[in-house]
Length: 218
Image (cartoon, rainbow, N blue to C red; front, side, top):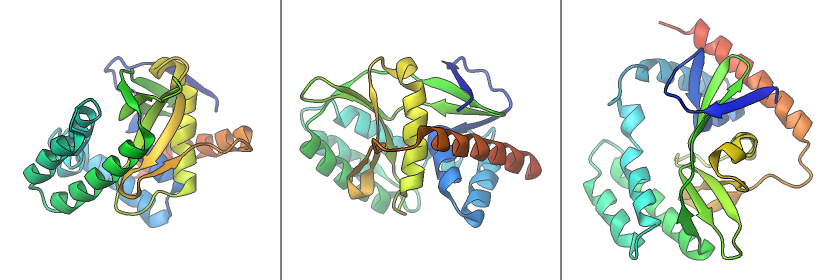
């Protein structure tokens, strides 16, 4: 991908976005791409911005639930506490999807790191929502798709490739996994994926994001 990965050091350089936002941008249509960039400008420098905090409580609850004896009870508390416009329904659907996936997958939560991936003029913050060990001992680093609109295959592939490139910095030996939580659907890179073509696409999308960011700056 013409990239280098480095540990998160808290230092913002060039254009910065999250791996999940970049994946959504890369797979989005014209209108959605503009919404993503404009919203990112609006959130910049505002820690408690609605768009920044909307999913934080349910993600924190999922991290606790994955290590709890009664994950349903943990998530029920988070759903009950939801108060922002749209949160109750969103949290209820995310919690139900997580529980359906978690009970079927029978995984064990483990610790992992975070990193920054540079792609051209963009720095992607890559912080898995969860890291897990399967019944056979295999490790996975996981990003969740939480939005109401279903995750697209292109969006999943973008996130999966970013995780794969950063895997050694996140959790040595881990495989990437993306889960569309509201639908409890797993995504992995197909074995016949043309990695060179995927990397070329993501590099081009990073250039597009950087250009879009600078051209829409307030």
